[in-house]
Image (cartoon, rainbow, N blue to C red):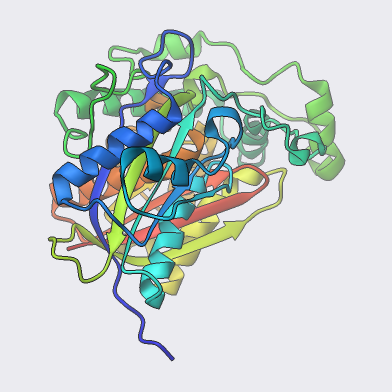
Length: 382
């Protein structure tokens, strides 16, 4: 049996998050150009211009994101790597990092660049017309699934709104303090995440209407599978839901490189939940990766958990006993934006940077995705 290699993160680079709409900061930048920009920045920072593979996560792989975008980016940027594009919906970026780590650990590869890209403004969600979206459970809106979790777990509107205010406030403070500067690669004149709203008030959040009410056909799908609920309390608003954005991120993963590593990949995991309460799978993946490593939540000082709606974050914090001082301490995707396949790579970068800022040992980055999938990476600061 081959010896298992230690796997390290040597560098993380990411674009700002641009609003996914006409006029957004990256709306006129193609997904290919985002990857080209990051590969160039990675080469400038590390001297690495070739790798055993380039693995890119992307959730909607058609049009400008079709045709194996990873290989295309390698060709057009002059980065020497075969290139593979992977899709596990919103967890695609973190699963690209997981795949890279497995390849390096096994000895199959020594250097892999992994991450994700998504231009939601240029390649809209569901535009791939995949068969999943035509299934009753596949067509269930994630916002409705989040409302199901809020209903099941007993969270109220006030709790959700206060979480929405917390993440916006922390994101604004983090950007003002320069906490995202180390990994950031400015692109198209954009130098920060566009969705952040400094000065947002609780009164503004309280005044927002529920975003996913008025969907009786969606509620019927849920109640067919969960008749015990009786009814669904629609509580999430646009202020407690992840904003859509355009972004990309890349992580240099390897072993034995002539570079100072930033972190060791101490474990990875994926998990599934039922497709009705689909967004709980990310938490399950975190529980699994910690158990596999012989750790408990109290051993982890930095949690970067994709904010797939406020209820999922409240559930995570309550179930795992994670206080505000360790959970999404620089804001999250509700405040800064969710770029589907890119989000996992951005969270890995944020986790690594916060570990070094704090001098902490362990951190976890995790994402929940469509159809009940979730993935996590456990990182140890070097």
